[in-house]
Image (tube, rainbow, N blue to C red):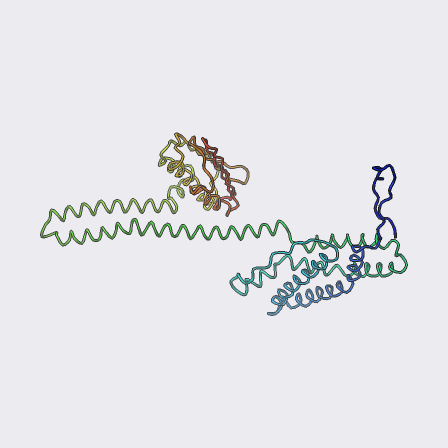
Length: 394
């Protein structure tokens, strides 16, 4: 029995008290010793598995079964890593998060699943862990086993030092990459947002065509049919119907132009953001000052997102803000495209208020953009959007 901790003397009652005596070989120490003794058999198995996988799978990569065999072996390495994390958690108290499972069931074809398994960083890091563990397993097993008989007074300290090295290796090689896992989760979420947004846009276009231009063209066809029937019997009525049909044609063409502008305006393709945003601002119900400070044009996809972001914000200003003036500023800072839209309206806009702000934030987030809304009650409202800059293809 030996004292393993010290504390200041307790002088509350005027006497000195020694710290409580604890056994040097407590339960944590025995767990560490057991972990170190298991290192050798576990390391031998892992080393044989890793070397066999790398040698056999690598030598057979020129054949049909080489890459599938290597992919299956990497999936098996994931399971070995899971067992090692469980052993470290039980005996060393190391809390290592489990990596995200590979979404093989959601992947389309066999080749895509094969490629996903082959580029799995978790499997490769587990193979590296198993390949380098054999010398360490031999050292820890022999040292601990010998110390149990000849160096038992210092064995707790040796066990703690060796166990700390094992803790470091488990955390370094068997824990998931936080940044990588976070990025994967973001990309999965962003992919869902992009799919939902595209589906919503298709439904909007279909609805606008069905309820707008298509309905007018049907009425136009019916009107022209009636005018054709009355052309000989009642020329005046036929002429009146033709005149009405002419008006319907004009309205249908205007709706088709508005729909095409909503998909992708021609002025944006031909003249860029400055002219396109000026055109949008001219249709706003409040005076809008547009300032675009760009030396070059961004990629068409980024340019389109910037245009529709400003267009949606100006529509919100027209419908909800009760503003007297507004401004739009667009500029580039290093590798980011920044957009700032201000108005002097009543403020109080929120991302969950049903004004389309949430959808804009999701769309920008899907392309690694940012959306910041500052709209105190009473105004003014300032919306700052940020998009990644990509150069326009020559």
